[in-house]
Length: 140
Ligand SMILES: Cc1cc2nc3c(=O)[nH]c(=O)nc-3n(C[C@H](O)[C@H](O)[C@H](O)COP(=O)(O)O)c2cc1C
Image (cartoon, rainbow, N blue to C red):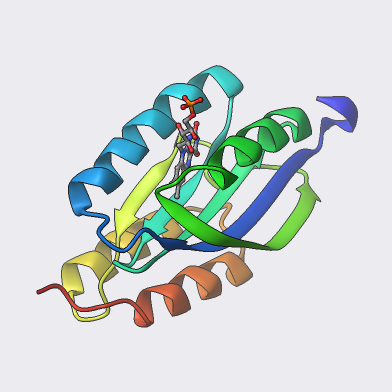
């Protein structure tokens, strides 16, 4: 990787209206397969309406993958709100951690807290995902 830095990008987007939890699992499966090849890691959260994702890896891999993700018909309205060069990955052990969050579920809170409690996770990343969780839709 040139100069040893990792590119880290974070976006939110709006899921297609009828997207199910099974669709979300299918997305995660695809993500894990390609991210293994591209040496990408990160976290993808789905709150029933929106996605928030951190994608981290070499600049070339991140650019290649985000171009694919952006044209994926399972969501739209992508807004990249953070892009930075960092010394180390926040989610080195996850080809793509995935979590369905729900503001009223203590289990989903515990699962998210667990992922965000890893040593390298920055405080602002924790804040972004915790606030994202709080404006999701309760499970039916
Ligand atoms: C919200 C969201 C996040 C995704 N994240 C990833 C990812 O991290 N890595 C990946 O390879 N694909 C990811 N995908 C899936 C790709 O968008 C999908 O595999 C690709 O667009 C399909 O391209 P293809 O038809 O050329 O194979 C994501 C899709 C969505 C909707």
